[in-house]
Length: 190
Image (cartoon, rainbow, N blue to C red; front, side):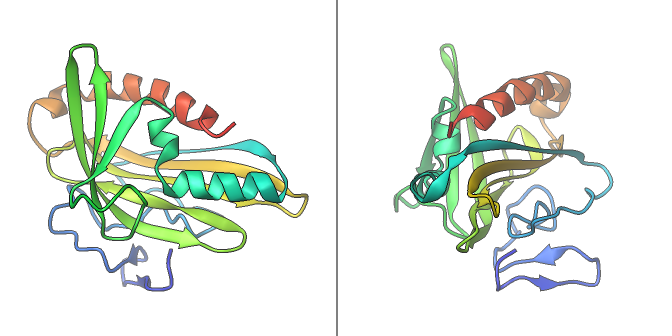
């Protein structure tokens, strides 16, 4: 969570991000600023995995910059464009379109960054799905380091079927694709 986050009576963080176009709620449930992640709310499939990226200050600097520039996604075969043309650096409240090419087809995924963390030990962001996204939920990419100087990448994800439309009927197929893509994410910075 960022400093701007506050706790709500529901126990889930809120942020400065407007949830008017998000297709789930509340934003910030993957808690990219937290070392430990609490359980997922009911109705979501929860995923978390951590891999070692490398060691030392140089690796930390490169990985921190890469994660905030969406390189976990782009190195995994996606393109990312800011809806307002401002560039791809992740910024809270920024809206982006993530595009996945599937042969001659392209799937466009509208998302919004719901939290950004940038501390000396932890750097990353979470984005939420907006209306029109094939699924509903949130995903976080976080680079962090431990006391031994190891640099790690943690992926957190909450997923459920999109609220309506054709994608909802294809949810099981999307889950299989998501499993393959997550494997790419976890190799993206190594």
